[in-house]
Amino acid sequence: MGEPGQGRALRRDAEENRRRIVAAGREVFAERGLGATLNDVAHHAGLGVGTVYRRFPDKQALAEAVFAEELAEIAAMARAALGAPDAFGALAGFLEEALARAERSRGLRELMRQGGEVGAPLARARAEIAAHCGELVERAREQGALREGVSQADIAPIAAMVDAVMALPGGGGPQGWRRYLVVLVDGLRAGPGRGPLPAAGAPD
Image: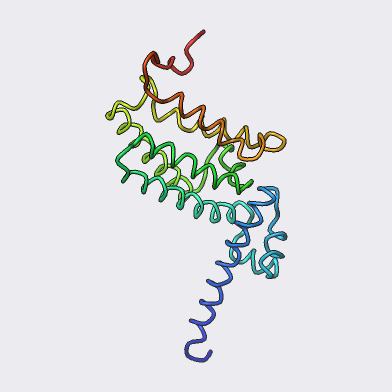
């Protein structure tokens, strides 16, 4: 029989190892993308690969844990934006802040390009981000700041277009993606002489 408290110490060690692995995974996936291996993460964390496998059975499980944390933080940013009085400005500011996070993480950008099923924590965070963006869009419409025809469904394609600029050689130049984000966001703004946007998928 083990000494009293030995079980608690082992649990603390296991939790500390998990935190180290997730932190290392965030840094490794940010730099190398989803092509990085669990061996890469273990080396970066200063742990044996067996320790990593005991916490995460495969790379997908680790990536889900890493990016569920990342997306939860972005969802918190979107939730905070809801408190701003200027909904359009808050939406534009959130997009810039969220894309700045994505710029620093190759793995996050690769994840957001992927379709298909994801685990519950990732799906929850994605749904929360979409819901908060939808609320900002509705408030901007009520405030008369949004061009007719713009909807919450336009936000993800805008982020994807900026991601495409980031993927260009040199990323469109220093801070180049911000230039194009301003152009895209300005296209959503209501103003004199601006007709409604054409419906998505409408023929020319």
